[in-house]
Length: 52
Image: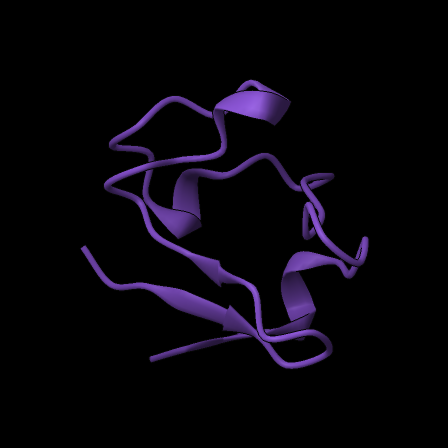
């Protein structure tokens, strides 16, 4: 699974860890995140992420 980086603040979404503080279980791919998921650090939408 690929990781994605927020181009605003540099946060890296790693599917291996998910985002449990916001209800995203480990193993959830970036493509399967809810449409309304935002960066947990800066609040940027998914469109502000790029694959790394």
